[in-house]
Length: 410
Image (cartoon, rainbow, N blue to C red; front, side):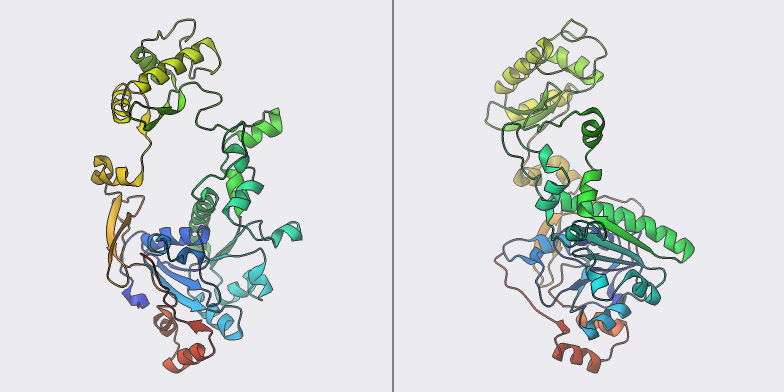
């Protein structure tokens, strides 16, 4: 268990209090970054519904709930509302993820929250937003449905097959990152003015915002996107190539400098009719494109993936072996940059996962605590806001708060 005073002083967000009532990925991912950079992050879990991140067969909670303190609180109950409003009274940021309008339906509108904390930055994460067509606002949403509705899924897969979702849960992570940037920008302004902010983060809109030029090309030029599969549809020499040892590499033959060096490496003439000077890309299904593809396929088939990776990079051609996690764990550059780290779970076991990223030089983040069990910090969090032992026990009796440990298979 941990009180506020037990949260160590570190990172650029030390002293910032974040409360989040969210599950799965998007909301917790935004909160997790702040927890790893020093914020006191209180995770409100529902006593009625276990977060799907707590699946007993995986370690998502351990990776994406570390440094957080947990209270399992039934927010919409009368006592739960009272407790929730006291929790956010001195908070800087509150993040919730639910169907659009859920907190307003409970009587916890932005205005009610601001009555208790005028400078509070509020982020509402939902699939379809807090307003718009009512039928859509109240729809449930997960990563896959959001990718489908946002036009993102149409971009992924092979041109002659059904579209596929990008994995793992790209839409959720994009939504979490945009939420993070938004709440920190709003916090900067709130510190200056004393006036809070409310952010309406619709999952499908976050994903739409991260689609490069494809929406504009279709809307303005009528240029339909083509699913890429393993090779680019508009650049030769870009894609996945099979090597002699059966392993795959990804090669990116783009840019005048890369073409100048790469064509010479493959025995082709830069500045010839097939490869004119100053072109940034070689187009597929052209004499030059066909020749480049033929050369790359033949070259890769004659070498192991590690040989291709080494030789092309030494020649200044972007290339990488398609790594798996065990390869990454043994890779010298991963090791030199300490991409993986060990930390202890709440019950004292040592586990390995991804380190705090990105790295800050002057105020680095850190992991000071493993992921909490459900409601592990109820008593400490409530005593921090002035609740007596008797009051806390009363909430347990009424099941407004609970504590629970789940079985794990790892």
